[in-house]
Image (tube, rainbow over all chains, first blue to last red; front, side, top):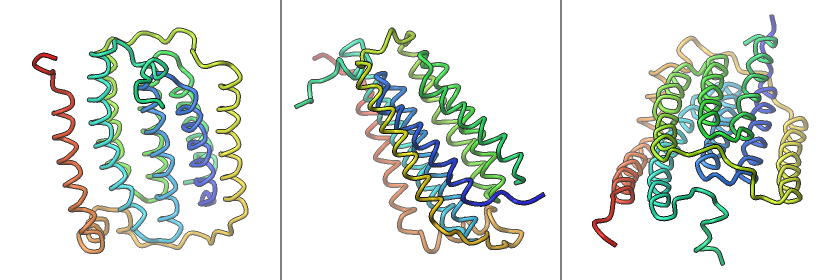
Length: 102
Length: 165
């Protein structure tokens, strides 16, 4: 049984990234937009791990560690902002929260 | 990881990612995200990244998604009514995503990649990861702890209920 080539993992990562991008662009529920961003981060993580394996180095996996920390920080602060937004506006629809829009 | 196994996992991952992006009920989106993250952890195992796979399940599926579910249920979000985005705009956005994916795929197809380097038994375990983390990446590691501290303080301050407006 032959091993899967690294480029297949990279292709899967590209597909996931494209799906996440479509999610960020088309969804209007802020929480779902956030989940799509997590999807983007994970697609990139898959690339990092695949390339680390291809090169036989651990550095890619260390970067994934940092990406996870940043994702956790981002989720905590972002969800706190959404909580406040919902208290103020009673909605999480991105089209109805346009005060900062130019 | 053998090719048929990879294909099964890849198809399942793409399907659960599509659930996240397409489903109108945020709860199902979050569950799709959990399944995507678990499948990615399995793919990590196939790439000899055991430590990262375990972290993926504990940190992502265990902590971050639970945070999402917590907020969704706290706010009692209902199923989205029909999208307010105009249909042509939706089509353009989807097309943009598809073009992006296609471009990256072409880029990958045209890049010559050497066959994976054979690795020794300890690759992907705790020890080599910690060794890199606490030598070459010590400064980023310390900065990450600072980032997490700032995020904790920020989340508490932002999430606190104001006394009175």
